[in-house]
Amino acid sequence: MTLHTDQMSDSFRIGAILAAVGGFLDAYTYLARGQVFANAQTGNIVLLGVHLSEGDFKKALSYLVPILAFVAGVFVDEWIKHRLEGKLALHWRQTVLLIEILALVVVIFLPLGKTDAFANALVSFICAMQVQSFRKFHGMPYATTMCTGNLRSGTDHLVKYFQTKDPSLREKSFHYYSIILFFILGAAIGAVGTKLWGSTALVICCILLAIAFAMLFVKPKTE
Image (cartoon, rainbow, N blue to C red; front, top):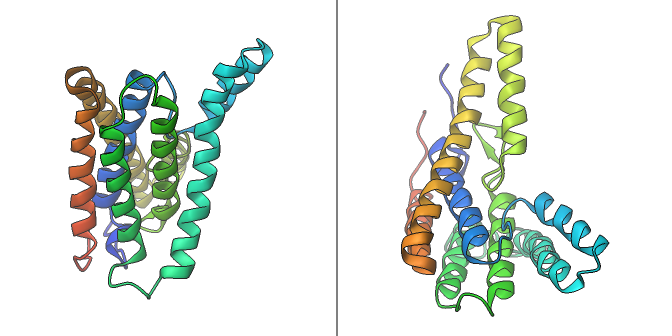
């Protein structure tokens, strides 16, 4: 099957890069910033409830902060999209990527430990902007900062392929599983990088986001 995309942001290559960044950031915040998940807020919501039940309100707050930051990220992303689209030289999605890069540069210089809450809030904020801005590849809904939905969609297409033998469903399933693999790869690199270099490892994410930013200047081709 030949897949077409009307814009580069809808391409698999952008999705793969952003999924790797998503996995990297989750590994980084979990290992270096107090075992908090920056991307998938379900884990934070569960842990929020657990610590509330134990009466540990200080620990519960550490999970509430990234949740609220994620909500704020969605609001800001929508504001950028609807208020700035067509008014800037850059595409609004490129503006989002620049904000991500700048925020990560700030996180790099935040000391580990006492500034973890702020660092996690920043990462959750930009992850929300990323997942809100890049929601489709080849016209199919997906997420670059979490895997549950991608796993469900990939498996759903695989089951339907076995039922119908439609090769397009097999290829769609393959693309979803590929995005998950890039997320895992990013998490693995993030874990190794964080253990070796600490917050400086986030430079890798900045480079990947810069590549995605540059790719948005390229006219999309048939993939």
